[in-house]
Amino acid sequence: MKQILTALLLLVCLTNSTAQNYDEAKVPAYVLPEVLKTAAGKEVKSRKMWEDVRRPEILRLFEDNIYGQMPKDYDSIRYTIKNEDKGAMNGKARLKEVAINVYRNRKSVEINVVLFVPNHSKKPAPVLLLINNRGTENTDPTRKVKSGFWPAEMVIDSGYAVAAFHVSDLAPDNKDTFMNGVVQLYPEQLEADNGMRAIGAWAWGASRVMDYFEKDKDIDAGNVAVVGHSRGGKASLWAAAQDQRFAVCVTNCSGNTGAALARRQFGERITRINTTFPHWFNNNYKKFNDKENDLPVDQHMLIALIAPRPLYATNASKDLWADPTGTFLALKKAEKTYALYGLKSKLPANPPGINAPIPSSPLAYHNREGEHDLTAYDWGNFIRLMKSRP
Ligand code: GCU
View (tube, protein in one colour):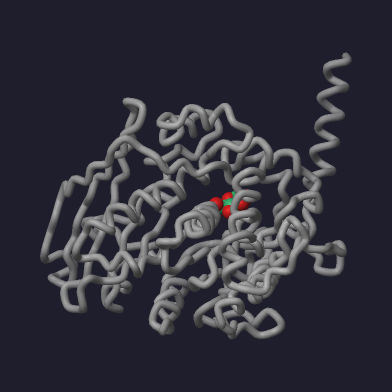
């Protein structure tokens, strides 16, 4: 009887705490933590103070409270071209299928990368790298299957290389098996409350692909955009925040613990994401269930960590779960960090309408008509951002 009552109580608590709000009028009043004020209470007025003091402070807060540590050491790394076709896509591109093997502690992971490089434009080529969180058929190297999720031909026609790897090579997206990947190389991470979990592992994978790009003469490693959708978009943000070699970040419909402000408590909330996906973020993050206002950061600060590099955040009009307005506001709140670099945002004061993209450096945004997805429309705009850069 006692057990039944406890179970019922738990259910009631969970139901109450996970109630979702989709009504703008019911967004609670909130105060965001200051991006440009140090822990010691000093105003950050220069780029130097941002880079030397405040930026490392914020990075550490995200590591400790949300995404976990990002281990950088490994024993060795090996790149193997498993398949190459100089005349792929009817001669338009060179295909390389690359296996990246990373070793540490006598354990290893293999990251499989599909890469197309345009044959008829300048080399080395800038590249858009997708962290693929959907089926591998979306990134079919044979091109028998073509998908709007990764419209490789369109990217090649625009003069850019295009690449992808799958999240499961780094950490299966499952609460019981996520540790069967990168985390095996760093077992100490599992013990730590601020240890790496699945989203951290996917971002780590993007950095290893970057290690490979630095060795591939066809690729301009100083011009790599890391792209992710939804959970993959949370990982692309964390990858770009951690690894400043990424020149551009694209986060598509990334929502809660992605590009949207947590304190608005609109759509998905922290309790819900931590309950459904307990393997995505570190143990410490669970302390903020139902306590968004206690977080020492909010997501505008993650975007600020990407400055001065261009960032594109998107939403879809029917994807209120990912809070399109909260995403726009997070970008706006990061503007003053870009301003430290003399960069002026072209975003309007209020969210633009549906299908009214602002694909311009340094802060780009759009709210596409339709459902939660990554489509050719989105990619077309990412390419516009790439072209708009000085
Ligand atoms: C769920 C989850 C989101 C996530 C999305 C996705 O809806 O709640 O946080 O972004 O899945 O990855 O598609």
